Amino acid sequence: MSKKINFAIIGCGRIAQRHAEQINKFGFLKAVCDIEVNKAQDLGQKYNATAYQSIEELLLKEKNIDVVSICTPNGLHAEHTIKALNAGNHVLCEKPMAIKVYDCGEMIKAAERNNKRLFIVKQNRFNPPVVAVKEAIDKGVFGTIYSIQLSCFWNRNFDYYKNSWKGTKELDGGTLFTQFSHFIDLIYWMIGDIKNVYSFKDNFGHKNIIEFEDTGVIALKFYSGALGTINYTVNSYGKNMEGSLTIFGEKGTVKIGGQYLNELEYQNIENFKFSDLPEGNPAYNYGQYQGSMSNHYLVYENLIDVLTNGGTISTNSYEGLKTVEIIDKIYTSAQKSNLLS
Ligand SMILES: NC(=O)c1ccc[n+]([C@@H]2O[C@H](COP(=O)([O-])OP(=O)(O)OC[C@H]3O[C@@H](n4cnc5c(N)ncnc54)[C@H](O)[C@@H]3O)[C@@H](O)[C@H]2O)c1
Image (cartoon, rainbow, N blue to C red; front, top):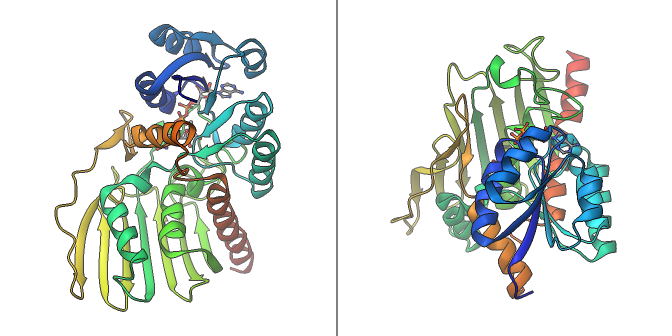
């Protein structure tokens, strides 16, 4: 594929704006779709793309699309991804890949059957300290990894969930899916797959606002033998406080911190020092709240590299499934613990 790539976006809400900006740099935005017609029209007008109100109509009429970017609520990713793949398009799907492991399997099958690529957005993998620490782990700089601590202390207030799919079991799925699936992906990517999980969850500050937990604590055992803990909440008072990962290895300790794993906060490593890490990008600012690092241009750069130069997908669908499987293990364990308590 040497020509410029044609894209469509499904779901024209907040994150779709970031996708459209990148598509405009890397290719052509040909069509957009939202069930709220004014949202599709606004985005379509801005980028000279045809606006649709249904994905079926878009896929039927737009025959020159190469890649469909799925920016709809979590619970709709599987349905929309499978439709776009079956219509003969590659798909870039926002995180989380889906909220059910079964659905991830169906998405993978649809990609394989149609021989199309399925990319999952996990832009935190591109945060400079994350890239550096992952490379050092792979080179054995830390020796055996003994244990890790993941802290996810963010704030999401009533206004964030008001009149939204966010906070609903069916379309959001849980706090680990919408707020912290990036961080679960990072521990899977950096430390490995998780064998055993023991967890508790509760809703302290968002009763009658969200249909699931706002807080959880988790003990983990990785297949490698490493132990881990995760402490997550959207009750950090007034604002996001921290998104951090501390790694204790045989030959060194490191903490990647900041609000979204964007700063190297601590290091003490045998014969090794991280220095001159590139400045990261700021967080996405959605007005009333902040999200992860604004790295979508790196996600699109990778997509173009894969489709035009035979590059490797930075987060493929099997890895996307792993995050969903780990979250499913955590929630299943928490349900059992809550029954016992
Ligand atoms: N990678 C990141 O950092 C990041 C950041 C924010 C959101 N996200 C993910 O992006 C997705 C969208 O989140 P958002 O914050 O933009 O939500 P949003 O509510 O602002 O946008 C979602 C849009 O999808 C539309 N929609 C709903 N059902 C539809 C359907 N059947 N067909 C077409 N459009 C439909 C809605 O009308 C809405 O405009 C979520 O999966 C979220 O987890 C990722």
